[in-house]
Image (tube, rainbow, N blue to C red; front, side, top):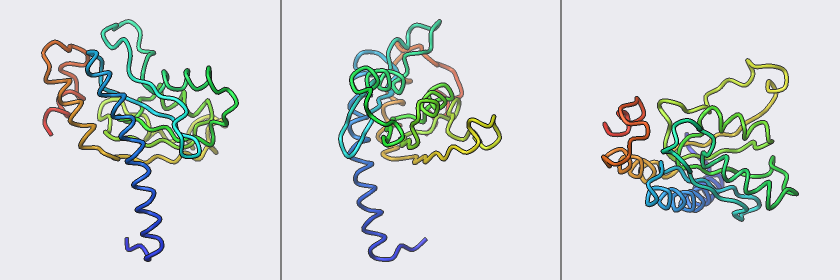
Length: 180
């Protein structure tokens, strides 16, 4: 698709903004990786400012899958800034949100998600909301994928290559990630 000159300028500006905030999510992911966690990082942005962030916690605890980066960031935001209208934020995550995180973000009012690396095994953003119950049918989500995908992919490859990390080893996601 060819953009008119002014349209291309707008697109380039949007791309730069997405990359800037995805760099911040990547920083969260790098910190998680350094701590031995699955390298998912997340920042929540409102009006051009980061209002919350989070990284994956407790990936070694196989009994409880609740401490995903998006959930950690959302909890932080709701604790520290309950006044923020979640329909006005953008969530940046180094990995496509899983179905649990995607649904949690939707139910809490988030309408824009930007991610780096696709979750070939458990990504939830392809869920067709218009086929669900009436509460969800008219929700208009904006999903932007593959922002700084290469940088995100490299973190996941590093995680899966580390023999000390056993989380999701041998899964479709691990194999897909390592084959790239």
